Length: 200
Image (tube, rainbow, N blue to C red; front, side, top):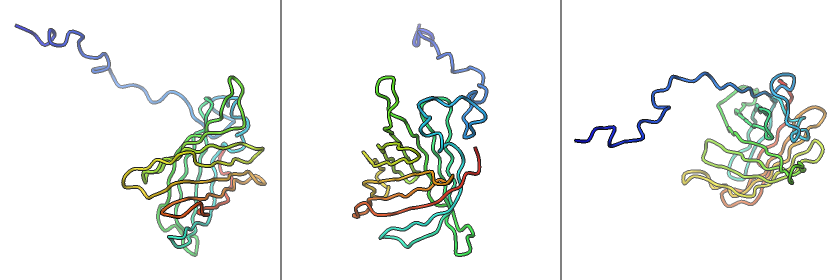
């Protein structure tokens, strides 16, 4: 006669009945005055770290132009990449919120040549609408320019085939312009905004 132990001689995994774990023990920060030390590879991107908030204008040949507000949080945890998170909301003519708009999360990763960090940059950007973009680009002073190398999308996502983004720190503000290729159109201006630092 076999027993359950004979049928599964390695037994249950050790984590099966283990007690709960404490909260995530490592700090991530958008404020360079607290938290982990900035990885040296991120020094060229240091001006971007913080919380930014402002407004912009959007449009595309297939939609009406619109005004929006946006908050971007760029943070680090001591490793050689930045975490990027953006949320936006539509505004009416009196700058009152109408409804939530685009959301995006991603990572900016400096490219290494052996042990040496270069001015090249990889960025992964993902949306809840089923689109993931891989950007390649460069850091030049306080400017970051990115162009898509690949776009992946779910079966139900909008047909987006490419993108180009230009970021810059200008007089202490974060400015950007974004072009998009989608639904049969080539790269076309889509979003532009000016955000001011509100944290970090």
